[in-house]
Amino acid sequence: MKWNTIESVNDLNAIAERSKTVPCLIFKHSTRCPVSSMARYRLEDDWNFPEAELEPYFLDLIKHRDISQAIAQDFQVHHESPQVLLIRNGECTYDASHLDITVDEIRECYADV
Image (cartoon, rainbow, N blue to C red; front, side, top):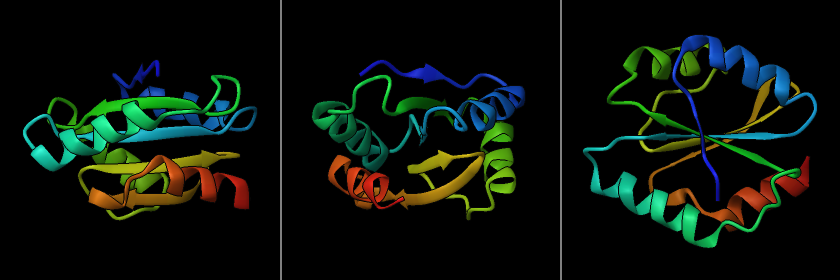
């Protein structure tokens, strides 16, 4: 699994635009939270999406709280940590948090749309 890092609010616009071509997954990670570390490990360990099928993006939300808040606002989701958002055609079509973050669940929601 190769993460694309989110470093600025402008990256969110790029992700929304990119999601019109290929679905994108944003993972909001708290470097201080053991549940977030577990969710990250599970994603990385079970990841089985080809790069051309789903692009994963990573946000260190401790370092970038402003971007985390912009994600909640731009994609109209309640802020949680850890959290994943599936972005398609510029919109969030699925989000999950904490131990509900699994590759199987993402794949199921990915296939439903």
